[in-house]
Length: 322
Length: 261
Image (cartoon, rainbow over all chains, first blue to last red; front, side, top):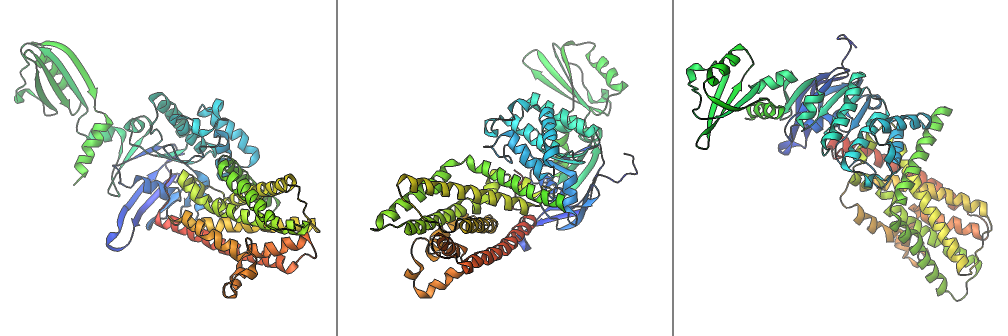
C-alpha cells in the first residue's frame, strides 16, 4: 500500500442524531476521519463520546443521519453487503456468543454468517482456533470458558473471514495481562499483514501497544487527531523524576529552574524529603539541573517515570471538557 | 444458478442445524411442550369418549399434534429474535454477509422441524403404549400436509419473531395469542361450537385448514380445497413475514435499538 491508495475507512461529515425534536441527542456531529491499510487507529473518548455509535455505523448496524462512510471502497449505506464482506467486528465482553453451544459450533455459525462455504470453513476455523490458542477447548461449551477465553473466541470469529478492515470494540476488557498480551500479538500480526484496524478501548495500554494514531472523540466530535508521541506530549509533560533523600533538602528556588521544568518538594517525616520534577522535555538543562540541585544533598532513591497515557488522556480531556 | 441455490439451501440448512443445537440446550421447554402437553391432551381426550374408533383416534391425534405445534411455534419460533437479542447475538447476525432473512428462515425451519418431530414421536409412542390404533388412508397426502404445515410454521415463526422483538411484551403477546388460535382453529373444540359471529375468523388460520386436510387424509378423500387454503394462507403469511422483517430491519438500523453485545 502507498500513500496514493484510497484509505480503508473514510468517514466524511458523519452525523447521527437519536430521537426527535427537543429530546433529540446528537451522538456524532460532523465526524471525519481516515484509516489506512496496515494502520491501527485508536478512538478514545469518555463514556457517551460517540465511539460505539461510530463503530455501529461502520459495521452497518446503524444508519447515519447524514454524512458518508466508505469501508474498503464501499459506501456503508448504499453497499452494506460489500462493506460487510470486507469488515470484521470484534466485540468486547461476555455476550454475543451462544454460551450453551461449543466454541466450534459458534465458529461454524458465525463463519457461515461471514459468507464462508463449508469447504473453506474447516480450514479457517482450525487456523483461527490455533491463532487464539483455543484448539484444545473448542469442543467445550462456551459457558464453561473463562472471560479471557470468550474474548479470544470473539477474536477468532473476527479472524475467520480474513477481513480488510477490523473494528475492535474494547477487545481486552476483563482479560488478565497474559491474555491481553496474547490478544494484542494477534492484532499486531493482522496489522502487519495490511489490515486496517479501528480500535476503541478504555485500556490505554492497548492504545500504547497497538495504535499508530489516536483520535480523540468528545461530545460527538473529533477533537484531536495525533500520533501516540504527540498525544503524550499534549499532556504537557514528558516524564516525572522523583528524588527521595534525607537531611537538608535541595535549594529549589524558582530562579534556578529552566522553563521546561516544574518542581514540587514534599517533606516526608522529620528528616526525609521527596522532590518531583515534572519535565516538559528531556534536554541538557535537565541533567545540569539535576547535577546542581542534588550534588550537595543526600539522595536515597531516584525514580524516572515516563508520562502514562492515562495521564495524557486525563489532561487532554480536562482541557476539552467545558 | 446451481451454486447460488446450493448456497441458499446451505445457509438454510446450516441455520436450521444451528437452531436445533440451540433448541437442544433448553430441553425443559421441549419436554413440556413436546412431550407432557401432547401426552396429557391425548390421554384425556381419548378417555372422554365411550367409543374410540381408529378414525376418531386419528382425528384426535391430529388435533393434539396441531395444538402442540402451535404452542411450540408461539413459544420458540416466535421468540427466536427475542432470544438472540437477549443473548447479545442479534447484532453479529444482522451485520453478517449472509442475508439475515434467509438465516432467520433457516432458524425458524429448524425450530418447526424439531418441534414437529418431537410431537409426532410423542403422539406415536403414546398411542402405541396405550394400545390405540389409528387409521391413515392416504399416508402420502398426510406427509404432504405435514410438510405444508411445517412451512406454515416457518413463516409464522419469522413473522411473529420480527414483530415480537420490537416490543417488550413479546411473552405476554405469545400467551395471549395461544388460546384464541386453539379455539378458532377448531383444535380443542369443534368449530360448530363457536358462535357464528366469530366463526368466520377461522378462515384466516392455516391451522384450521391443516386440521381439515390432515383429518381428511385419515379417512375418506383428501380435501384438496383445504390443502389449497393452507398453501394460500402460508403464502400470505410469508408476504406478511417479509414485511414484518423488513420493518424490523429498518427500525433497528434507524433507531439503533440493538447493542453489539
